Image (cartoon, rainbow, N blue to C red; front, side, top):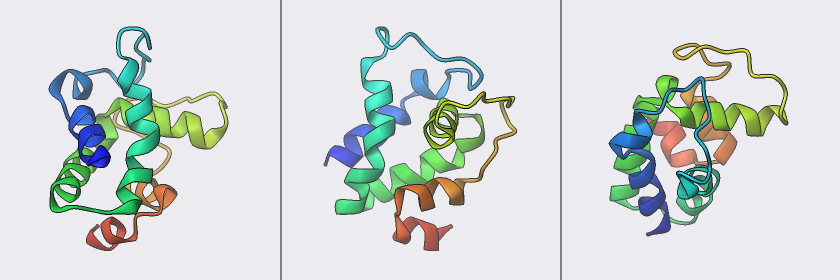
Length: 108
């Protein structure tokens, strides 16, 4: 259930519309970073049909989603990001592999 809540939030139009090259003020969107960090953990526990649909919807927009920027910051350990929207240093498959969600990886 938590995976579905986080994924619904990440797929919500105001979040999807955030530009990938900038970071929003965390005080304006307190659930954003938490959703990003923990959707994968909850998805690993149990992948419902709803969560599966939401993951695929999120990954369909991965290249232009602020989520990709947050993932790069996490994986790179804070190294400079040097990317522009639409050109990311890793793919959706890298993202799913990072979170260890085999069921989604095989769907991709």
